[in-house]
Length: 251
Image 1: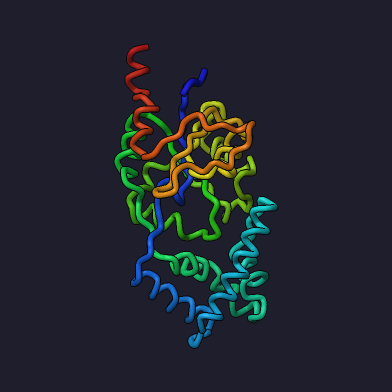
Image 2: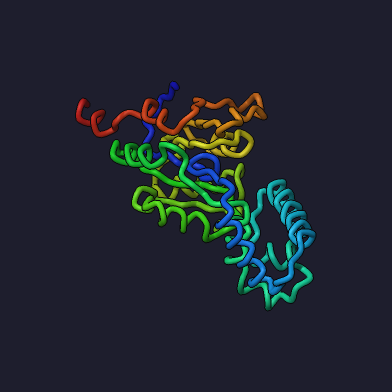
């Protein structure tokens, strides 16, 4: 993995990279219960959830095509539940989005995530998150639950900055907050079309792709954007990024 510059910061995608979502009946049952309460539709049918899913997918396609992320309030009042009075839905938008994501199951750290994050931090790398997400609550709550907050100096969410990867703004915002040049940053993600293209366009030194379990590596890359490394598991990062503290001592 050749690079002429020392890497100071390693930024990560979240979904599919640092964590996975799996079907989990108690989580899903509780999520649907909250959704019925928050929408005021206690008798919601399967057809109702299918309608909301179609609307959400239409929004997601539009948002990705335009690299825009609307606020949770706008998503629910304009796209998913436009037929419900604004004043009823708007105050619940953040909780609705969180429950909407949990209807698919629970999130768990990817194997090796805890050990890899801790080791990279101890080796002197500055860490951060850059993630496309509809929810402003989901990832911060996950980081807190895992005890990962002390490791990540920056958390850039499309739900907060209103821009989606592969736009360069999320990557530049992370580098700016860390006060590290993009050319001294590496990014680890699982989507070539969003993660690799975005970080390379922002001037990051390295773009590393991790395979999703059971899916292998995504292959929709453009000729201009080639991963600097492909890995199967997070612990392989420890082979790619040496101890910077030892390097300074040797120098």
